[in-house]
Length: 333
Image (cartoon, rainbow, N blue to C red; front, side):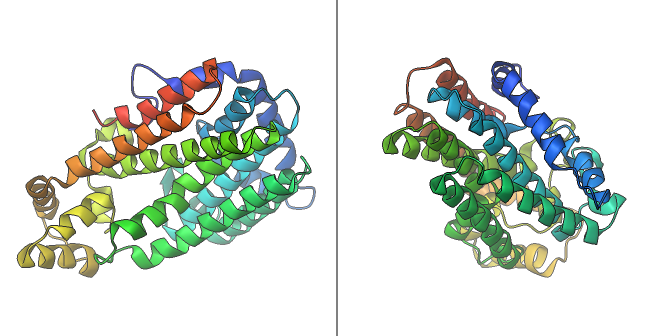
């Protein structure tokens, strides 16, 4: 389910509160995605940036900086940096996953080609590094460059973990930390650093972003099996059909007997899926409480995110960030 689909929308309240900053970030993104020599770069970038994303990651940077009392200009460059890193990873992911649609629109690799998507993604990574040095902080450069490395590492790990029922919860956590949580935590952490927050406050911001990202991705993986297709934009069981080993599958395999394990090997590892196999998978999830256990983990991470905020100043934005942590898992109710 998308974040637009509940009555209360904390991300929209954040966007309204940060509207002036977000407008400046959008202008900076438009300015920096221009290329004097390769017009395809802004064409591809504009297609994916303009596809209706919620700017959640740059909002986290802006909110963290404002929460810590920052009044300078550099948080906007850092927010644009975070969005460029995110956009670059989306371009690369769509090539790796051979995707044809994102946010209800054709992917860039479908409209142009794989080469263009990869190379424009590379350009955006380079642009992100140009932006991240502008505040003149080695600590910020370290945080964001480490996040970029973690993201890439997670993508490679996912290649080896995908369609392998030996994948355990520790490997899954590494994959989703690279896929989602690493950029969330870097986004919040650099907001604190640019605002000259204390080490304890910076650590709390990192912990909040990490836990929020983990909750967000676990919730997304659970919704693949029990979400409303009209709300999520995905058909129930897409991950199953694509043979992705996500947390519900890992939990079901861990509790499986010999017959059940053979089923998982056939449908996930071998890819021999037959009519009725999704229903059988859902029955195995129910038998072993895999979906309930996955839901508990998502709520546990959301609770960790809220707990981390307790170490930060009392501020309207702190309440919005707490509501956001609740919201990413409220989709599961």
